[in-house]
Length: 162
Image: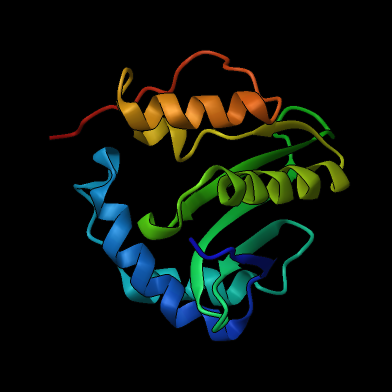
């Protein structure tokens, strides 16, 4: 398996990132009901690229500089205090490039970024909360986060509107 390189995303990555999001997000159990919107995804990615104070996104690229995975997060002031809170937005690696090294690279860059933004609370739940309890995917994501120093706190509940 080829080693991927990590870097901040750039405008030229956006079209391929949109393709990946359009294909893979609807495969997550909690997002099957969503109608993905290319224009909305493009807007979010293009308009946050220069918003490094609150939004960070990094990609894993192959030897041709093609995006094969990525992680994004935001860090904002809490609604309850003047302290900052970081949340992940997405964490993804194309199936053929999934390994512990690549996963750790993404989690580490997100964690380092949140720490550098003085986040008092750094959450990693978006992707992990997408898998059913007891599933292989959830167990793997939990193990990855535990190795990176994250600890489970409660559960994420979703109300199914259908």
